[in-house]
Image (cartoon, rainbow, N blue to C red; front, side, top):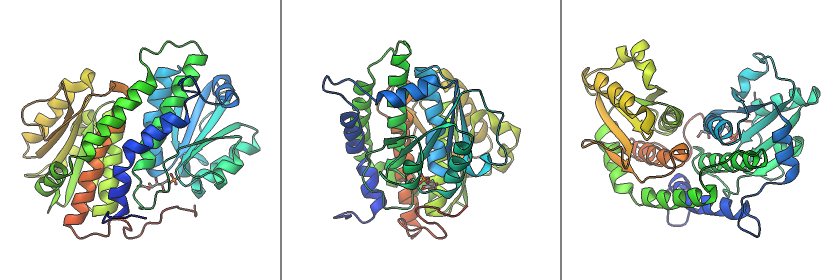
Length: 357
Ligand code: F6R
């Protein structure tokens, strides 16, 4: 039930800190160590390459998950859009592991890949919010998200839960392979849950950003570099699906290769600047669009902030920033949709689970 909340989407955004704490607790052993069952960790560590298959928001979580797995477990990862995979099947490695990410566990595009790769005898793991769902039943292994039912069509808490579970999978597999992680992941996830709480308490600021940047605009661009690019893709999907504003997310460096032609006086650009190693470059991209009249909304991280930034995120581990940086984007989309009188929980033309290919 949505209780006092006007929409499920807002309730589900607010639930994110609790979900992250629940995930930490569910994946901790009696000693407080993060743990995942040995058969799953063996399946991961026997693979010479991981293929992540997903659609929509879950695909965006997969892009971030690739970074987690490659950096924390040192296993190469490819991420594929489920609907493209069957006819664009890449040359597979010798010992692939297929990881399906799906909130509902019912997405037909993902299931058809699962059926196809099982015919070849490949190992499969589903990461889903729904125990007993089709993708869970049909894969060799399942990891659960523990996010509780997600009712709003626009996925929010499942996305952050997917990234949290992927980070745990990466860290536990990495540890078993002898990779030395320089931080304590459960502690970092705890810091993230606290940071999420601060963001969920910043609704007035987000409403104001939505009003200032998105109230009447036709379109909107999201830019970022490194993991910020992937979060921008998710931000643009959220904005278009619930507010019907034409939105596009892309890598900061790609601007000058075409999209910059679309920048006009007042075009909103939402830029994420949470990554120290690319901070100068993304700030440079913002200057390029401002020189063409864009209206920049910069969301940065404490320590990297500059005077005119629209919002500064609390500090979290640099690799894990997507878990917090997406929250302002979810809230901004929510308020943009409200301003435009859109049906936030049930946007037109969309269904919660897409069971046709
Ligand atoms: C976006 C959204 C969709 C789903 C996609 C995959 O907010 O909800 O893009 O992420 O349809 O669904 P699942 O994760 O259930 O496979």
